[in-house]
Image 1 (cartoon, rainbow, N blue to C red):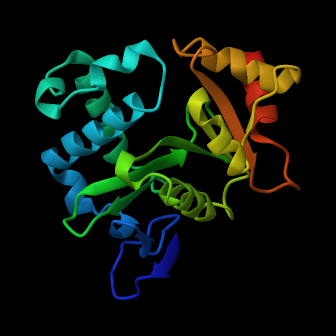
Image 2 (cartoon, one colour):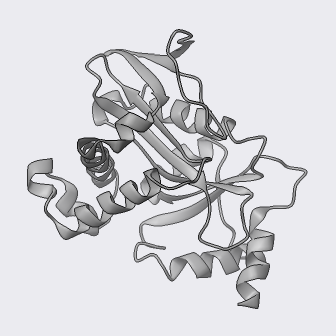
Length: 236
């Protein structure tokens, strides 16, 4: 993999902008940039992005609940689960969260081949020091060229000055990748981390069978986010 800056491409700065760049692969260059506001407003874009994520998630998990997503969008788009996912993505992209980053890697035909969606974690009130990697995926043909690593690395780098940690819920089949990127599973033997595990597991049908909770410190001198989060949970 070789990354090169693309200085002539304009981009809209947000709280944590990522400057456009290219990734060279065996199948040609991928052009990486944040999604623009006009692009996000198109209904077809939401459907295409949702299908991209769902189809790729389904190809990278043993979770049987994802089996229905291993089909073409024409067969998937009217399903209840797909519509729920699509509605969620739409709500997130239209939120006022200016820390949200949607990084897209497109081929020369402007087709999405990789994507990473992230924003400040907001499931627990008053915890805003952790950046949540909601979704990251790469189309099968472009895997093993460092695309996922690049998207995740650039997304995290963009918030390294404003967030203490990066956090994600990742499929166990991809644990090696997350560890390589500096993430470690939350430790159930630590009281604070275990509180977070129990809190999130109540909302997830796929934990612990298929996914784990991974954290990466961005500022080692700063107290971890889950200490404050655990205090808040224990008070409620």
